[in-house]
Image 1 (tube, rainbow, N blue to C red):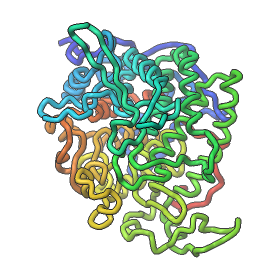
Image 2: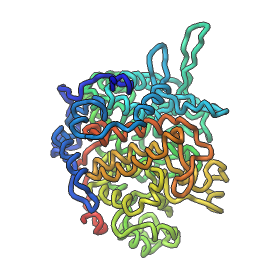
Image 3: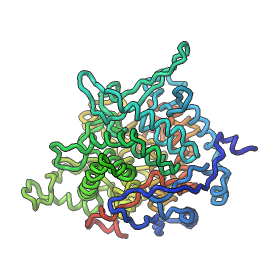
Image 4: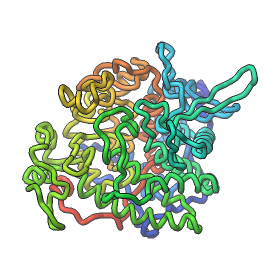
Length: 556
């Protein structure tokens, strides 16, 4: 049997030689980043041997290395030498389903639709190409040596960025990226037309803050995977990055370096109490700034932005690591806070009332482990755990190596709560009863342990896997992938799962959800060929490392 034909993949060499881009860095002289493969309490011998092979292929220098886009997990020399097992039968099914979701514009693939669910009576907007949804699809195609669709997507969304954007009589910022777009085919006239949504059709009419960040992150992933510097260096892409950054770096009344956001501006696109300074947006903001720093030209226009980015990164990293981070010791300190403090000597700088700490967090917090909490603003700390924000914090190195290790310790200590029977909880815990009525406005879709309110989302598997590889804990990713493989195909690739353990297919979950499919493929390919991590991971900048003293879980 021709394995390549059977799996529908291109015959691309796993080994390439190309002149690589040295990512610009705050210091320009970063030490060579190294993958931390320090033995952890549950680090098995198989994990160590796999990562040792990965290191031999160049994993000790992510930021200056070219991440090859060869086929992963099939019959490539690298994968066959590393793995003695056959590809999981789900892989072929996943690729077939992913290719079925492709959207074409004038004969060229430009993205993938959100879901390919024939059984659903209401299409709603699931037949559109969403910027955030396409990211795992893009990574899958890049890892499989098919970069053209990613390039087409980046250029098409860049073109849409230039459109005039109005909601009622208000004009959005020039740099805003669309939440999604749809290609309309006119078979009679043989024409294709693109219709974009910048939030004017979204629930709650909220513009997507994360779309621009994901676009920048994906542009860097494309550059790292292909070694092609020309796309990022085009005047159009340079301008696109500057326009996005202009929206984020503008000066106003803010006293914090974090971004002030409305509810529903990200993956959690409904009212869920994340207004203010949500961890997901701050982590993506941080990563997009660092990616931009690597790609912006140092010409007259770019140099100004580089200087502003450097200043913002220093302030943002200090703020997030100081005030959003929580572990056992920090929780105990907050519990003992005094209130109504005034002057620069205040310890309780946000005047958080200790009685507002929810009861659940005292039982949830292990002695060893920690995480970035959901939100911090005056007199308010949202102690909920959010998966995307914490995983991106690891990948972007917003989290220090010690914090990254503590987040993984938390995964191991609270596996039932955060993973359960289907990876991965979008947030923990769910809000319910009176709090649910107040926070969500009685949203029937976000009931407890469902959808964005504690639901389990398979797409998050790729972020968890990437975080596990970066922190030297591949055994955690392997266990999560095995859980997903026991259900996903049988359940027709649902959008999300419900229940405290993620046991039930979501009550309104679409089947054949594209990013559930792509997230699984990316997780599998990264675990089998860890060098792919280079396209979505950034190593720590030594100049942003804060002098902080936290619990012993950081240094164990």
